[in-house]
Length: 224
Image (tube, rainbow, N blue to C red; front, side, top):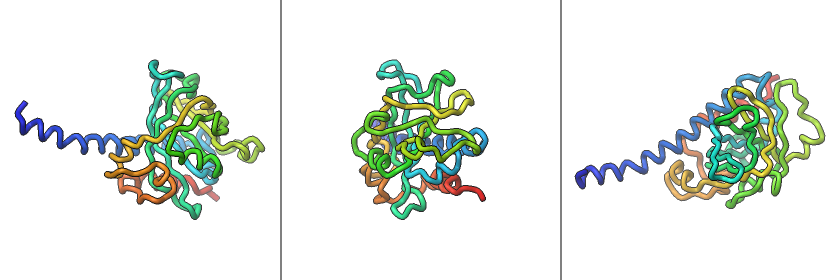
């Protein structure tokens, strides 16, 4: 390899890494769109409309080197301060615990709805937190006719779901941990940005996030 070829190859790395971060947004949008497009088998819109934050982890994988055997990367968006609209996405990692692979082997898509400010504050932490430890969570109800006003749902900080091999269900993620992915946030935003600043709407969303934000906004409205 010539020196010039090496220089050109190295100069292309930031662009390649940025494309990988953008692909995470594309996959997250695709997963959420597919699930919400089947209302009888998806997440009730009433819950999305009430959610303070939404986290999406496409294609969670089994990984034997991690305690608990699961590992995935995804994104989280939160409501803006005025309660309307969504912040830009912050990249996250979800690992460990039992992540619903019992409904089907292989890769699993995971969606988490953070239902109140206490849960949002924990998600916005710069360090990781453990679901079911620091944050109370429960399997979310599925389908347009599901009851969404039970006492348990009102108290839960987080409602969790997974999809594997076409089967979609509410699952518990107790023992799993969520932490920011600062390296991918830098690739996505083109500069050093803090996880909590993104989710508190202190950082403008990149244009590459427009499609995901539009999808979240569309499904945050309950049809009349």
